[in-house]
Image 1 (cartoon, one colour):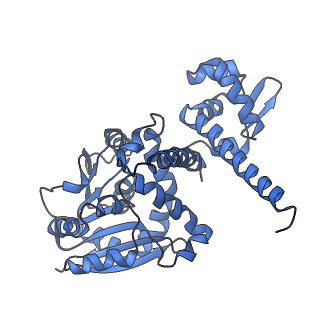
Image 2 (tube, helix red, strand yellow):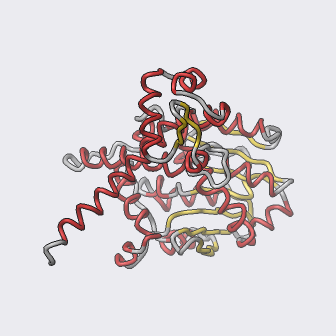
Image 3 (cartoon, rainbow, N blue to C red):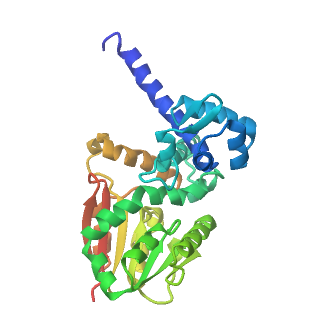
Length: 343
């Protein structure tokens, strides 16, 4: 090891620490509507921005200085305006950077919980996602901004079953639906499809219902609070989707759950499962596209879960008499498993 190596490492980690600070400052601006308020004002001093956003003026003044320091705001004297990066933090902006800010704070929350719980082995479950009051309302928008475009532009055209279900219509069910982004996207694509979303968080159901109404989809989409582990349907579904959520029910009995999926599907229908694909070779985790999966698997343990291999999921469906097909997306880290019930 060269003599300069420790200094190089310190420099690298100081850079990482600054990146975490940027995400923290950006997160504050996102969840408190400061970026959006400043967009509406165009230019404003801290007091005017605080009044527009309904926030404390002293906090906002110090936030403005921090946001300026990290190039999220520009300044003319005491007046601030959005920089290019700050504009990209607005949730409705094309290619919004909002998910990075929300995910960054969620990651630190989950890391802190893992550090504490590692001492005892406790695994408190999904309730940890609701422990930070400002985070839960942004969980659905974060996932939508991160994955909706991939779903609509890449996954839907590449998976033949979506074309089939569009042609015949019927019922699509999304277990763990979040803010309903998947069913809203599916309803826009598949005009004859009706949807039912089930989620364990009331905040998500409220968001999903409101967003469906805003898009004119309330007559076709319904969202209810419920436990995906024990769901029941009034009639068999043509499509049952789980988006990055199957691993949440796996340890409680994967085969039992898949049997429940099969029972609630119409003949010819399919379970469509979207999961991070845990690699068979540990060395793959060093690839940038898979590093986030390694961190996620640590935080999933806190929630009582672990990530799965796509072939492991496919084998479980085949054991229950469904016919699975695996599709890979991204750089191989995203897997969609379509498991058809024989007609």
